[in-house]
Length: 274
Image 1 (cartoon, helix red, strand yellow):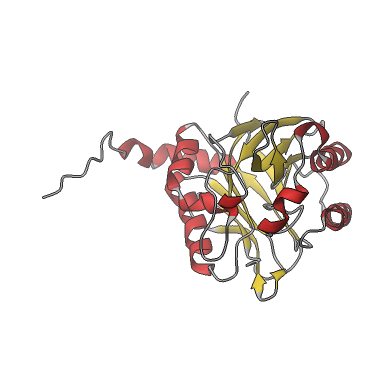
Image 2: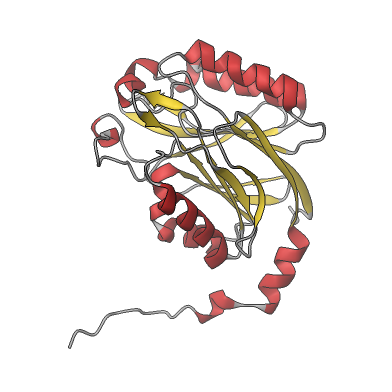
């Protein structure tokens, strides 16, 4: 499969209703019906949009692969709108009884073609994701319509190793689907932009907006960042809706060919301590 030249991508920033899967399904259906532009090639959803960032609700909201309402919904949307979907994440219960924070990837035909389970689990500062969820074992890069896409979820952004592995495997587009807390604006801004710049790749940094519970809020500042670190599209505030842009990969390929920074990576970075 050859490289894609141009795509149209839309990422949905939304405020999930904590613990209410039916309400969140309806919210996605309504926003897509109202706002998704024609000829969109890729639709991206945020982390745990099905239930919100509520670790206490993760296990009760979990779905098995053979009976997943989330995958059924996304499959229907993909077929109805002829769009590929990077489905944010839902809580997947595996056959061995373990739970994963998992991103389903659905093609235009409504077929589940890949899944990525979050490898790094955030269990600090009052969050305890690791008490409920099992970490995924491996990165997953998908090739859809000639676009090679590296998948990550939220806390994965703090680990540049996974992004470099995607780039070295040929990734054109890096995606981080998050439910990022409003109390950490600097890491969200800096790390997402850095992953794009250091890997010379487009980056979708999509997070939820809105209240989680009490005085806890999602940051609600989603962006699509180009290979130079410039913002191609963004939602600056708590607004719900799409950020949409057309990506021309030809300029990125030309830049990579003229600025071959990955060739300067050394085989060994063993530290000499003196």
